[in-house]
Image (cartoon, rainbow, N blue to C red; front, side, top):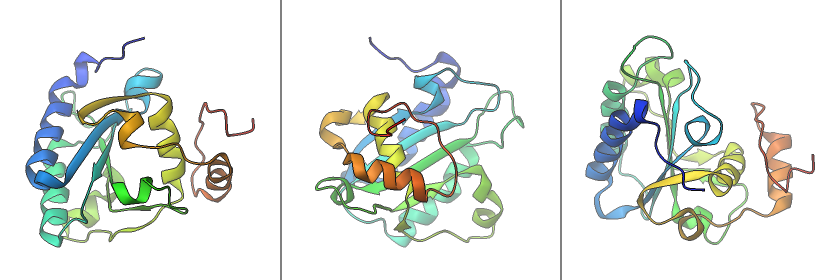
Length: 182
């Protein structure tokens, strides 16, 4: 089955990819669309989930530029008929291959961070148990928007890591994977 970007988010997704490509430059390895946009259908308040894989850590200037400029491309859920909320997670390729547990994310943008971002407060790179679940989702159902396909840009997380990530994740997440043991 060939997956395609829902037409209702095509322009916003392309704008986010252009921004990410411009800011990350040669360090960009891949951008993947995942989540409800490809797995189960967009609901009125669904966000657009993007995983960005890079080869080098972000500089503080890159982090600030991404965070500030993503604000203009994103909108709080239900606040705009033209724009959806964006959730952009940036990870270093070296966190994925070879698999590191617990994985770290380089950056995360989401509407829940809007107030901090507006004040110039950006989370640093940090360990994130949710990355295990996110990677599982990417491998199950995602669309490569830029760069490598999911099989080459992202390798499978060990089944034990998925179970541990589920147990340690601060927010519940329904996944459809073989490793969840459910």
